[in-house]
Image (tube, rainbow, N blue to C red; front, side):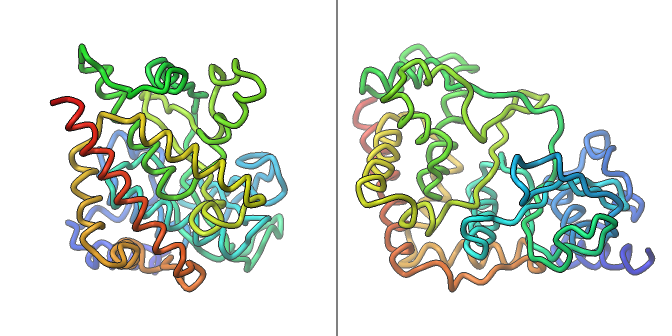
Length: 325
């Protein structure tokens, strides 16, 4: 226990944060009451996953397959742990860098995610296996597509609020972040899956979206990214299926006309680099050095397409500026 507290304090020093009382790490249930920053919560979670003792494993939670479980650590922190059953190594890379990308962009709607080996536990579940661990978020509610976006998709027009009100503008920017994030990561089993399904049953568009929820504060919670990056870009389905996925991703970006200024600044920062993925890798290594994942599994082809997708988003921003003027 003493070593765990020392590691926690060391991590705080490494990232330049003011020291917190050591007992905070053992009070996960009181995070909201203590008004911790997201960075401080990240460090608490990283320390728990890499160092704390597992007290329970519940394989009935966090996944409808045998590859996931709800893990409770000795400090009270809970995590959804899983191993991608389709692309094990690539899945870990995808989960880790999807989280780090949305952190870099300031989206902050994916639960804190780290990569670590599963420690010993009473269930002898996945012991020694390298898994992704995502902070467990309780009291989630299904989320539906906003009416404004549905109207744009059905009519093929820009989602533009001519009479802006604060609530609608916040919603438009939040969904803009989500669509941009899914486009950059190649996430297909959320909005893109919904678009494919409406071809066969149009009413599906009004139903809750897969892997998307709202928390008790009404904020979006985005989960499950093991089939993104190289996998989402190139490896799913036959060539015709992949063409449909790319086309639908591109169409959704083309309907956007409300953007968060901070997110655009980050995209412009990435676009200035010949290999923008390198910026993300450096950020991830600093943000979570204990989970830092090897990027050798990310192909050169992915890096080129990733750059093109960033440029396409910025092109859409210019298109909207012309539309508004």
